[in-house]
Image: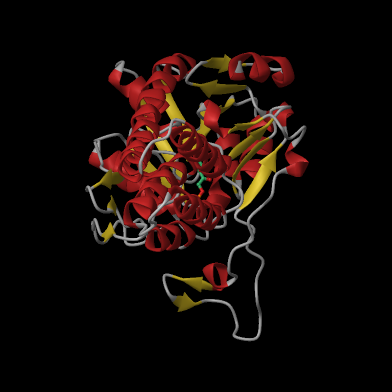
Amino acid sequence: MIKTIDWTGDGVRMIDQTKLPAVEEYPVFRTFEEVAEAIRTMVVRGAPAIGVAAALGMALGMKRSEAGDTAQAAADFRRIADTMAGTRPTAVNLFWAVERMTRRFERLLEDGADLDAIREGLVAEALAIRDEDIESNRRMGRLGQELLPSSGTVLTHCNAGALATAGYGTALGVIRAAVEHGKRLRVLADETRPFLQGARLTAWELWKDDIDVRVIADNMAGAFMRQGRVDAVIVGADRIAANGDVANKIGTYTIAVVAARHEIPFYVAAPTSTLDLSLATGAEIPIEERDPSEVTRFAGVRVVPESVTAFNPAFDVTPNDYVTAIITERGVARPPYGPSLAALAG
Ligand code: MRU
């Protein structure tokens, strides 16, 4: 399995996703600021992976903190947590991980732990978040694979695979599990402009696993569906509101609408750490706006006239009525999502 994120004992090792597929490189990030910058610049990306990276970055920050007492340690912890929370706004897994690390830190303080015990406790919590992520992806895979046909073509958007998580993947985890069960599936990967997560990352990791994958440009998906060449769609999510509205990579909404038009099932696979039941609808989900240069340039080359700029919203929201089912590690939610997601969130 691809090692997306690892703890080295004094740093966080991550595969550099900005360089794939041309170069497979695993740099080590040695300060929490470096980890935060890696999240911002999408060296590591994908909602669950961002959460794991933030948690390990926080543990790293406290390991390197020179605080001499717990009051100073608490101030350092706050600064590190705020830095992590300020990296990317849409994926709720980031804030979920920061909160979980904060709860652990507060419990350690309440228990009177010394600074060494605090540092060890935070590393243990971050590693638990990582291990639980892999485990929940495998469970999601087992539950979700039953929804996919025994043979056919599954379309996916962006990268919701091993690279977007601590391992195995959410949407791609479901596809992996289906293939492991003997289903004969072909994957259509949308290239996913502007960052090309589909063309660069989904294609790379499925190819590595010997799973049949072809890339299409984003604007081809509708025609493929109309021609009957797509049997199911499965995507990941960055945040799911209480009513089942789903924020995911920009372009997901378009695919969901066309899938509904052609009565193709549209599945979302996401761990319960992606649920944000504090938000009534997707309209409240903050959408990250990234640098226009990601759109005006292609592979570093400017493709838009110098005097013209671009919009670059990184995510969109798919209304719940386009979503056939939401697959989580605790079970499969069906409409109406208000009660079914609340039951899974427990
Ligand atoms: O901007 P990115 O690459 O972080 O966006 C990733 C996505 O939109 C994924 O589909 C989502 O995070 C789910 S990953 C399991």
